[in-house]
Length: 250
Ligand code: ZN
Ligand code: FE
Image 1 (cartoon, rainbow, N blue to C red):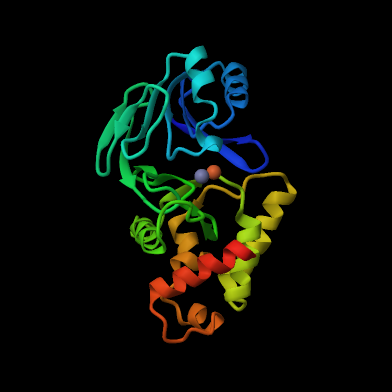
Image 2: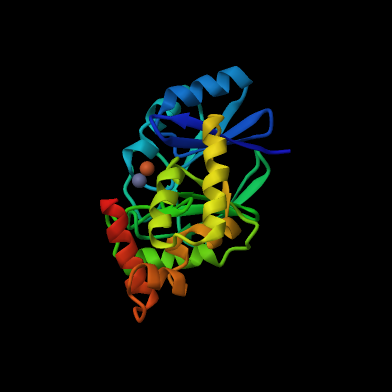
């Protein structure tokens, strides 16, 4: 049985760890020490590292982890990395025998141009593309690219768990409520997340179903959102672009 849990890093990053009591896989280890501490405490051997994109808060721990373990690294073939890794492309599947899990790679340009996600039925490790009630900033891609990437994710099965890499949920909900103040699912979610955070628990993973109900960036076709932005006749991409611009200033 595989356990999936977040290792908190820096102020708001999560390094997701999958383990079967013997071997562990981590996603986006920006900080090596919290990973090494967790491995030691739980008596786990690091077998693989999965990287979603090239930002330092996601890759900063790789070199140190490679000097302490014999882990393999998987990373996007569409980006450059200084460390040894296995480059992977959109649609490619690979199998990790140590944890007996396979992943499929999804190319999701937007936050960065080469950003990828790792998917296994029921589980999505989406890096900085999708956040709960929000999405990543457009550092490299265009709004159209990010919008298309989020659409790919919206089409995954609703019960897919979404393992985002930042705890931005409360702030994202506050912003979403400025656009959709009468969304009851969003109001309920705000209460639920506030309770989790008061108990110092992660608000994640979310799910595709939850995000479809509360995340404005996945709801650009909804009339409530168009009215909230005072753009009743705009198409979904225009709505997305406006939402992203407003969120940048929020
Ligand atoms: Zn990033
Ligand atoms: Fe990040």
